[in-house]
Amino acid sequence: MSSQLNINEFLKYKSKGIFFTYKNGRIEINFDNSIGLKTFYLDERKYFYLKKHITKKQPLISAIITKRFRPNIVLDLTAGFGFDAIQLAIYGISVICIEKNFAIFSMLKEYIGRIGLVDMEVATRIRPIFGDAKEILHEVGTKIPYPDVVYLDPFFSGYQMRRTKEKKYMQVIKLLAEDKDNNLDELFEGACEITNSRVVIKRAPNADVAYTKKVRLEYQIKGRGHRFDVYIKK
Ligand SMILES: C[S@@+](CC[C@H](N)C(=O)[O-])C[C@H]1O[C@@H](n2cnc3c(N)ncnc32)[C@H](O)[C@@H]1O
Image 1 (tube, protein in one colour):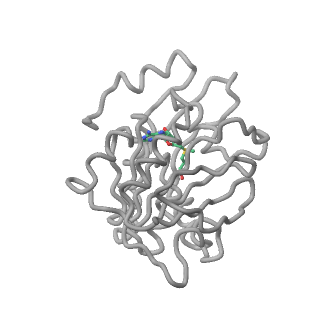
Image 2 (cartoon, protein in one colour):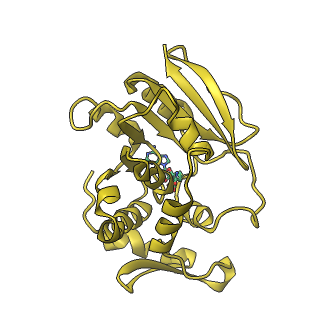
């Protein structure tokens, strides 16, 4: 799929009270008063914060890197604004991340470009790809290398977090995403097929455990308001 700038993809949000501008060297979003959100943009300060505060004890990092296992390549099938991918890249891992929503992808790509201006080494480890992961999974082995870990952070269906608790960036992702179907079954099957070693899913704390014969659930790591299920290929 082409990721050429298509202005209509941004203009279509106007009727929902969501307005994109390119200002201060970055993509910014303004919202109608009825939405109740202030101007939003992906901020380099968030990057510096992550770089300074991230530790091995954090659930995402301990789900993906262990004493005995350190992946070279992670394939993130649900990139969003890339915060999970960025944290892995800070840890020296190359992350290929796929996002199917054009507006979210454009913001992600532009953000990684800006991170590149302050930390080239980390930015070059992140390769954003525009498209639907269900289709792009077929390119693994040709255009995309086989990953050591496939990472999934789908929308939490049926789990309503209190709005005051939900991070602003996640509120924005939900406003922008046209389709909040978590398409987990299909993505999980595909992920188990192509991974060299592991599949990690970020799930709601009360979600069922996904199951397929190709992998076994090795362990779970509980975070605040979420859980990581770590599967190993049989
Ligand atoms: C919960 S958010 C992920 C947040 C992300 N981990 C972060 O750190 O910002 C889920 C994202 O996955 C994307 N998504 C859902 N299904 C997808 C698919 N089949 N292919 C690519 N992206 C998908 C959605 O558009 C949304 O941006």
